[in-house]
Image (cartoon, rainbow, N blue to C red; front, top):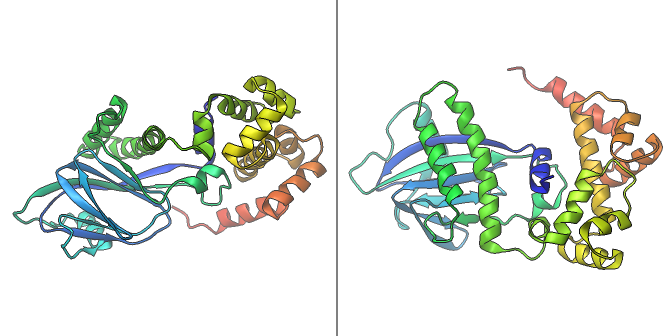
Length: 310
């Protein structure tokens, strides 16, 4: 079992592409902070990113992602005065020209990734505010270029089903960005570091794959090829919690998903995530989320009823 994919599935990852446009200098966009993880790909040309106190030059093939939705500026030149990003989106939606001068051209693919911000997993909180993947670097894997090339081609296409293909490819792009970030940054702590650590990743695979059984520390340690004490120490060094704490967290996240997406009785959900009784499951759920499973399900159902119809 692939633990990263397992987590991304429960995070409800979705991708969305806003536009693929060519801008001629001078041009600039001011992208405000928002709830989604915005991304931009420099398909052709060059531009500048201004983020916090930094000004960073971006080249063809570069991808930048703002996992926490932070505001930023994209500019043809650091001295250009930008226009609000919503104005660019409105011009694109109305098929009106914008930044159509005679200056140097830059082609950009822009969009966002979204996921459940209430998803209480280490991956959701450990990502940096900015991920910058340099597409032209010599150590960039071939698959990154392949995915971005197909995404750009589909975005330029009006073939049947292209919009669905584009959104799915955008999700693939996010996963590839995480892979590239792993290769580039080599984190030493957090969930992504745990995925890179052979023994700790085997422990994670055991937890994810057998969370519905009576799993013990000894079981996890045996599968990881470690002693119980060494696993407990190393696991906490990397992930900041014990294997059993993480097991409980993962069980509760899986329970949340079942409560949200099914009408299975609580006793069935309790058994599915490794609890012998509904009462023990309810206590563990309330400790984790400060509300009972029944209350969580009613709130989710109320949100669904109150949501506007398509």
